Length: 92
Image (cartoon, rainbow, N blue to C red):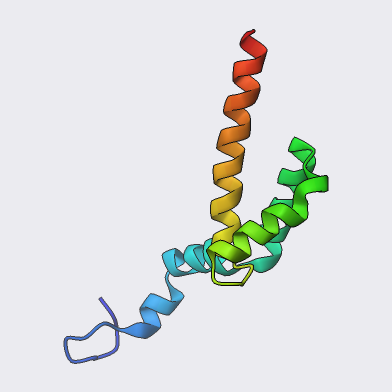
């Protein structure tokens, strides 16, 4: 419970200070972290030549913006697809 009297409403101060709020902000709003992750992803899969194509798709999907959430979502999707393809090729 909050030490502040908020009249039965949510205490925004405690929500703002909560670790879950910090985790959400880092996960969805930390542009630098996501760009670093994107660079690492491109390097791991050797996709620097198609970087513009991937960025254009993210922009198209997110209304013309290169959003943090859009980049995270696209990285996850492409990583799953490429990992599955690599696993399939290594079984042959």
